[in-house]
Image 1 (tube, rainbow, N blue to C red):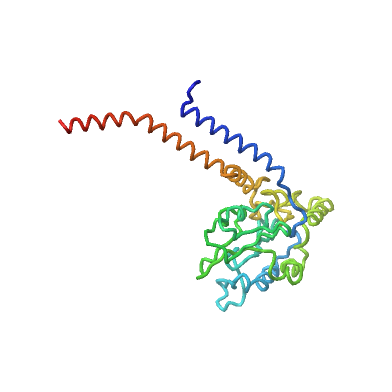
Image 2 (cartoon, rainbow, N blue to C red):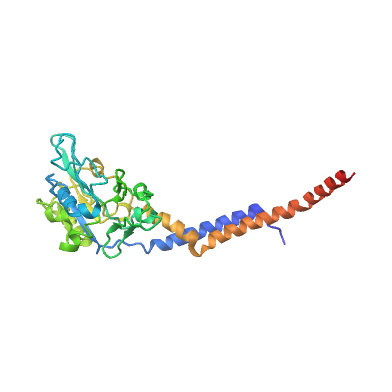
Length: 311
């Protein structure tokens, strides 16, 4: 029987692991489906008038529960207005104006996208970030969080913010008013108060139909694209706009969810703990082989040393 070398053994093991990983990933792709029954919001930038009533309502309703505070503007020493410049540890929802010229401008709303396959949930080591499979709400548990901030790094939309100025900080992001307005009134505070109908709330499938209807009935008014429908595997926060979304600060992203890809690899490698056991076995085999190879030589060397010492 032909003796297998260490190099050949490692090649075969690596090839087997690659085949195993690829095969499992392909099978897992079949199970990933977008749930159009989840709770969603549709933001129509062409309807937004920039009143920021949604920002005020979000902070008023979620201020106590989310430990949010008002942010003073530099021109307002008396602190009469709440004037955040960006999403922060005290602001979950933000309206901004993007202006290219006197003719080309648009408002845009920033808040959590509530991804169908959220990376923040995937990377959280203590399950402080969770996604409700029924509602689709990506929620945060401050009592579980250890402050690693992996969720901030993983989010493709740069949404979660950390309260750096607090003694007991937490991550701040939209939770669709899960514990406040949604529980009491069945609608998010921002959608409830929007006076221009720019924010619609409902099931994802219904809002997608509404967005597609607006695109059909208003040719030339909108870009022919519903942002959030397919980006990173689909999100529950959808956008319509007349300007390029990347100009509004919404990144250009692929349809594939990064979390889906990384989880396929991890779950395949560690499933049944087969890969770690195989690796441990390989290392043991190499160690034993080296011991057998060098054992007699070292024994002879010790014997020679003893003889020289005795002489």
